[in-house]
Length: 448
Image (cartoon, rainbow, N blue to C red; front, side, top):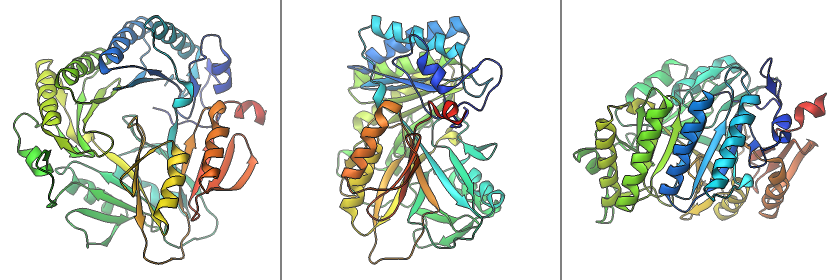
C-alpha cells in the first residue's frame, strides 16, 4: 500500500492526481487522502455490509482490480489504489464508479466526510539511524523515506530531517500492542536496530524503549496482567487458555489475522464471520486486504472480552479452518498514541475534536470505526521542558477540513502555521502538541 501524500507526484503513465480523480464523473462518494481514495457507506448491520462486500467481490474480480475493504457493524469503508502507479488511475475511477452504483442499488448512503487517515511524523537529526528502530518495533517496511504497514492497516511514519539537534524528551509517544508470544522477538529486534530500554519499572506489563535519538515506544503484550475484572469479563490469560481460540491474540480486544492469499477467500471468510457475529449478537470488525484479513472482537468503547465475544472468536476460528485458511498471529499489532498532559480534560477535548474520536473513560479516546490508532492521555505531576519531535498528521477530505480545523480551535487549539492553507495547517493543542491538517487534492495543481 503506497503512502503517498505528494499530491500526485508519485506514479507514471496513466496516473491521476487526486484532484483529477475527484473531478471524474461518478466519484462523488469518494475522497482522495494519503493512500488512494476512500468511500464510506453507512449500513444498518454487519449483514447488510456483507451483502455490499460480496457485490464488490464480483466487480473487483471482473476488473482484476481489488480494493481494501473495512467492514464495521454500522459502515463499510472501501479504498481504491493502483499499486503499479503508486497512486490513482483510471482503473480506480472505473471501479469506484461501479461500487458507488452498487451501493446506491442496495439503498446504502455514502458519507464522504466520514473518511480520514492518520499518520505520524518524527523529526530526526539522522533519519537513517532512527528508521531501523521504528521499522523493527512496528514491523513496518521502508517505502522511500517513510515507513508503512505492509498490511495496509496502521498509520505510516514520515521522517523529517532536522538540521539542529533537539534533545528534549517528547510529550507524545507510541504504544504498540503485540501478541504475547511475539513480544520477545519484537523487543530484541528493536534493541538490535539501535534501541535501548529506558526503564524496567513496568516490566512485564510493558517494555519502554527509545530510538537512538530518544523518541519512545512502549511494547505492550498483556503479560503479567493481574488486575481484577468483573465476573462477566474474560481476562487475557483466561482467554488464551480457552479452547478454540489458538488463532487469536489479546491486544485491544482480541484479534486474529488470516493469510488468505487472495481477495476471494478473504471475502468468503469475512462474510461468514459477519453472519456468525449477527447470530451471536456481538460486534465484529474486519479489515480485508488482498493477501489477508484482520478480525477483531471487543467493543470499541472499552475493548474487553466477554462470553459472547469469546464464543464469536471460537466460531470464527472454526469457520476459517473449515475454509482451509491459515492464521498468522505474528502479523497482529494495535497502535496507540499517548500524550503527557497537565490538564487531561482539556487535552482530551482537543484531540477528540481534532480526530473525530469519542471519549473512553476519563483519559482515553477511540476511533468509533476502529480504523485509526487509539489515544491515551497520561497525567503529568508537574511541568517538564519538552519538545514535540513526534507529531500527528490528519489527512482529511477537502470539504471536511475547514470544519475539523474549526472544531479543533473551538476545543482550545491554536494555529501556528497556515502559509500552505488549505493544503497544510499546523495547530497545537492547549499544551503545545502539534497536529498537521492535510488536504491532498489540488496540491499538485497548485504547485504547477
